[in-house]
Image (cartoon, rainbow, N blue to C red):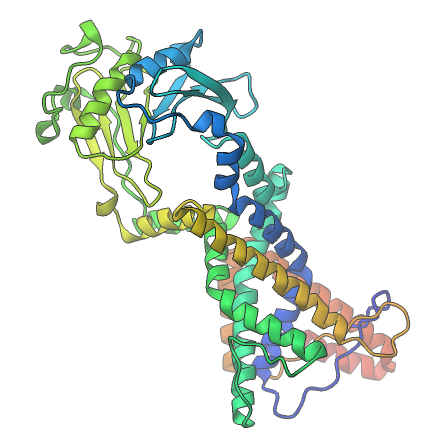
Length: 490
């Protein structure tokens, strides 16, 4: 391997005779990926640990906005909307979220005067009293929105997004490589008549071997969760995420979109989805067609909710208020594991369209559940604790990985010197079919996950160049030329 004088990295000693080329290749990839991507993973784990508890933290911080006494006879949602308006333009209304028992009604407004462009007003459902207003970002309260941005991009915008995508891109490579190396080590121990440990730590060893035991056992326990975080994290990323969305679209893996258009046929009636005797909304507008120029009557929220309940929607509901009467109202269950939704004509109170979560493709369901799991909202506090444990495991893996590198340094090293990296040339020692498969997989994965492909290509270029420099310094001119050719071939 390369000699880097500033850090004291030196060439690794020749591998043992029974070392297999595939293991050597995976070891080299695992080592360098861990060394160079470790800081990104460490930041993602630290910020993710804090974000995991965002739902619980915001319930403590914003309890006065989110909680209210349970009311035997709550006020109508239209009354809560009227109270929330309080001088605001009705045209700025975006949605109304009904109250859970012991919770508050939330009314969302478009607000150009705040950075996120949105303000939420909280209303006591028992008295109709406004409890306060907070700037929100896509419905997220300030604390969660801040923590989300910290985890996603360190508040650095598009540039910061690259750090999380790079971390998520390499995480699955590091985890899979580590699992292979740990399994390979356990198999070798079994072949030598020793106890094969995969999920436990050998406490009889010390030093670097003890660190390696902890690194491997923790990685084995956390592997499935870390792979899940990598996959779901990539689905939100800019470049790999775009490719994932394309695949989902081409494979028809997206949930059906709710149709909110009110053309003549839809406004005429809802067939079996009729409002079932729900009270008409909109006062004098009820029962006749509305023109696109008419303003939306916000008092229709009561009738729309009545229809939604009659259609079987349960629990907390989010009511989307249309910008004009040419568009239907929407009602969606806010269940953390996915919810049903309907579109309702605000004037005729007929159901225009319906999308049931249970009828969607399995890929759409997995996506919905995966997002909720990653955000710590699917199973409440238990979900948050598991996410925090995964973050701690990842921090442990990164720290112990660097510690192993340090513990492999020469014992009589002068100055700052780290352990020798795995020897290069592992790919050159592979059989041609294996090399071909590795190349094809690397190119395919690199194209689908662009930051992984670009960073891998950059590493290979730098590694070859540094190897050439190192060999030139340590060999005669004739030897240097021969070794350089071999380095390029590797």
